[in-house]
Image (cartoon, rainbow, N blue to C red; front, top):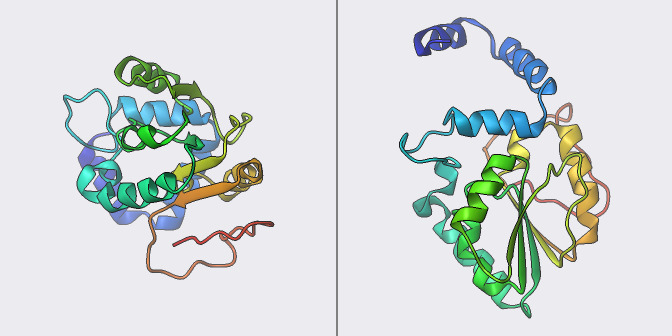
Length: 197
């Protein structure tokens, strides 16, 4: 669809209709297909000449404080085995590997994992194709889930959260919008507390 047509549709269709369409479309694709398509079509923006881009939420000026905080957590532990869910272009994770005994970076998109294997190397680093919703998660001490849940349905988030029980420490980071979450869309998770901010 052309950009003009998309803008026109967004102007005249209620958001609820667009939401129903996107939910229907996304249920027909696996996460590997959906996110692979996003990367191939460069829907998260960035330099069009770059091979991949994980979005402005991964740019250094945005994630600098996050990286500093996570490095502080990792430095306070004796070289933990870290598992990152949704590693994307690995621009963020690459700044954390030196503090891990083992760093396993996971993503649902096989082409992205192959690209990361070519570009990033280290004795303690490995890349694994994992759809966190449907596949078992790799073992580790600490899990990082950064800006993943915002792209998933509540039932998918619930499935992932249940699997996180195998890790002693969780670092979950999602963008926070200052709006009330309706009880119809929020998900209750048993076990560990989750701060959605």
